[in-house]
Length: 297
Length: 179
Figure (cartoon, each protein chain N blue to C red):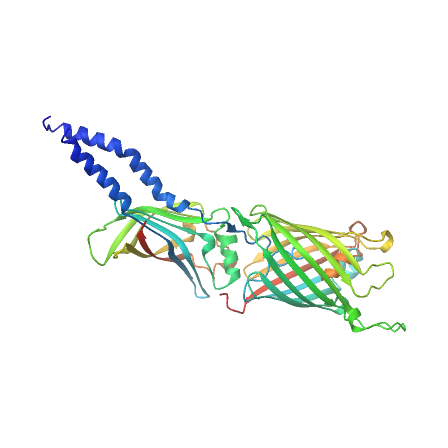
């Protein structure tokens, strides 16, 4: 066969046709490089702040982060105009949380309610991950509370240890979408001393909380806690709170309405006396201000 | 068909060398800086991937948004939650073509890459200048380029507009080895 000029293009075409699939495959190979499994991805920012409203969220302060929380619960809204719908008298809680690691946080707080001093530790021991790994995050929270009120002079001998109470809980949380997160929170409350014979030293609660993001700055939050085993006539109620989270740069403002006035776990989980249907509602806020005080790495 | 043979051989050989001419890394570094009179915000990822095909001149980069780390945990949260929305848009990608590259040249040479920069779900055609250096084993690539936030629909609210620059400087460096 002799070489003829017009054969060359034909051959080229044949050759390129032969290698076209190969070329295409090579192109796919090229971007395939990025498809290599990169492992499960961490799910972050399930909630905005360390508390959904009253109860703990799975969020902890990042490593070296100091979170200053100042919270108020005003008086009963049903007190009316005379007390400016409760704004005339406020209960306050001041707290400091510090992140030892990105998942382990320690904190102290003082509430005017019962002059209560708190020490707490919070540890997110399982992270939610996408693409394999745990579908929920698990966060343990333990708080030691010390009632600071003077003992009544009723002739009954009380010891310092009687001032103490404890709450242990696990926050089981899942971020279902960038907007919606849900948590289920079982808790155990132990009081070294109770103020009424009808009240047991140990009670358990099961609660749930959610957040729904309206936009990047705003979310609606809610939580509800059921006080489990208890005598019917103890005058206590389940805690229900609804609120808004507003984020502005370094602050998170949480505004809410709740039937619990205490801001530490024993009080709102086990000793909520207000009833929504009776108008025993308290307006309140938490302000979270974050300072990076330690090194992140 | 004796004339067809060299052609086929050539095609075959070029096909093979094209494959052998791919260079890649999964440890490229991408950092960025937002500079304002109030504060400078800097973050870095060492988990970027890069691939370069010396045969075709194709170049691509990809970085997981969550792999950027900041000096403050809160910055990182805001970056992922409020600005990059990293759950919906987990990766930033550049895919393009290297121009002006002399494969045989020694030392660093100035090159351009034109292609698509995809970030925050928005693709923008870009022409980016950088340097490429042939090393014994592969290539090193370095570049610095500005990314205007508005190009990628990254919304900076007024309250923080004095803290976050409108144009972010992105710096990239990668050492690519044969794939």
